[in-house]
Amino acid sequence: MNKKGVPTRLLGKTGEKVSILGLGGYHIGKLDKEESIKLIRKAIDEGITFMDNAWCYHQGRSEKLMGEALKNGYRQKAFVMTKNHGRTKERFNKQLEDSLKRLDTDYIDLLQLHEIINKGEPTKIVNEGVLEEALKAKKEGKIKYIGFTGHRYPSLHQEMLDIDFEWDTVQFPLNVLDYHFRSFQNQILPQANEKNMGVIGMKSLAAGRIFETDISVEEAIRYSLSMPISTLVSGIDSFEVLEQNLEIVRYFEPYSKKELDEIRKRFKDDAYKGQHEYYKTD
Image 1 (tube, rainbow, N blue to C red):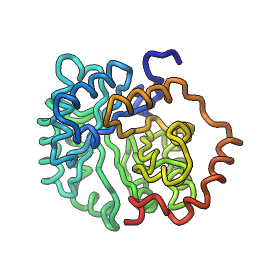
Image 2 (image 1 turned 90 degrees about the horizontal axis):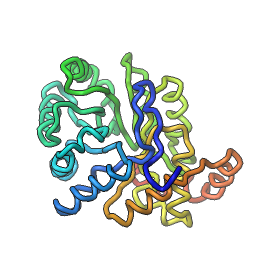
Image 3 (image 1 turned 90 degrees about the vertical axis):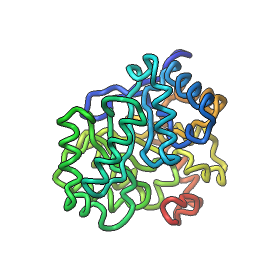
Image 4 (image 1 turned 45 degrees about the vertical axis):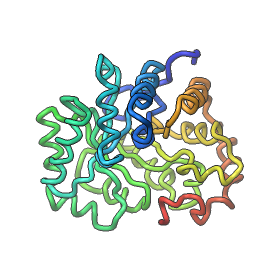
């Protein structure tokens, strides 16, 4: 890869090509308005097309900031994903309309049911008719694709996969620590690939806790991108972090099987109890 642009991969069976590095929506909501808009536009100008967000981030501020940044032709350059917490028809539709308004767009490329982290949620989503509403919104052109996210129990992702529904995408933590504890990459990733779903990795740095080990940023991101995923959402909260991550992905080469085995072995003692993956255990 040259020094411009970002490599792309297919987002599963959607056929959409997305940048292998995605811009995390939570972190941009922590910046002031002007800096956030400049950062989002700089990321897009540099080749990052996948935009992550959620209805809940900073009480909607993240979506509003992204909506501002996507004006002046930037919406057409971006693949916009946001997440929805609705567990009833009414809440799902209210949050969807909020997101469309905040993002100032007629449609959302990918809407994901967010944070499937509590027992009983997959059943509730089915029984409350949330999936019916999602399909209705898709038919109406408000959303193009439907997925789900979670960061605590692979078993709940399994329940979501077992639902008779054609999921387009799935999102979960993907880092070297995850390999050894409640492992999404071992339990869910192979099934998602078999179903040709778009896989969105997150928490490549274990929400910052991975630095309690001796891994480097480059090793951590390279590990996650060596997995068969479509894109990796990264919390980019400054132009310095943006440049750092762009350099990593532009010169990315996947680890070999031997190298993957070695790095997993290296961090086993740091990971087998979920020591640094607090989002799984808190």
